[in-house]
Amino acid sequence: MGSVVISLDAELGWGYLDFEDPPDRVEYARSGWTTLVDLFEEFDVPATWAIVGHLFLDDCDGRHSAHPAPDGWFEKETGIWRSRPDLRFGRDLVDAVRTSNANHEIGCHSYSHPQFGRIDHAFADAEIRACVDIASDYGVELDSFVYPRNDVGHRDVLEKYGFSCYRGPSPVFQDTPLPKGVHTLVDGVYVPGQSLLVTPSVDEYGLVDIPASLYLFSFEGMALDIANRLVGDPVVRQAKRGIDQAASDDGVFHMWLHPNNLHTDYSVERIRRILAYVADVRAETDLVVETMGEVARRTLAQSPVRPT
Image (cartoon, rainbow, N blue to C red):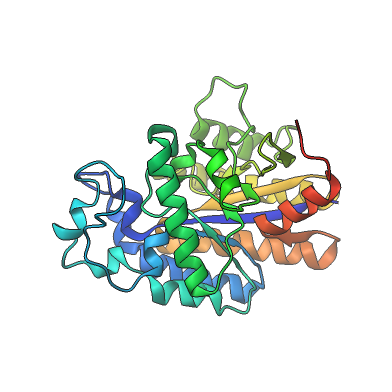
């Protein structure tokens, strides 16, 4: 019997710190966040909220002079974001996750959202250390990490600061020449036999790699409108197939998204339909919903000998 995991990249403005022109949906990050908190509570589904560390703050000078980031990395804080605390801080939103009855896990998404495959060791160390310290002051011990833009790097730093797991790249559709969005359409319409389940594994650092299965907003725009008229939402179809597989087979069906993805009524309805299906299948089968941290603890318990 398998399990379902949902992880979220919770960023507000930090997900676009290095963008000159962020997408419009960044303005929906707060409302999407609170909507998700409500939806998870409605269906009693716990998730791993990988939260950018800076969002734990409710104030700062915007300079971060002790941080070894390159010059200009934080310049938006004292520039165009100076009058946008709603993009920089999120203590109220972190509180909403922590106090939710859904029993969420608070994970880590770095301190300021750099791509770990493109930064040096000192930068990575400072990012993780800052998150661990801030979360500790908040009363949270961080176990799970989601790499910004899924760019895995500096895993030794995660080991150093006591993390147990991270979300790895998706192996699903890895061997296909089709773009991911096209595969979402084809797979959602024709429902082939390929499994959407992933198998967590312990890497050489003793960390559990919990690969992603499905990004819940991988197929959008005009193509989605056409597909909806013809066969229905291919993402919902694919999600239901993964949930069914987890209910009948061993493995993990790991979905992920951003709060800012919920920027239309339709996007909210998509998540509602998926969570409702999770709840229905869980009620009728032995399916369980786990956080990343729970998967890591289970995996490590079954693999007590650290790889060498």
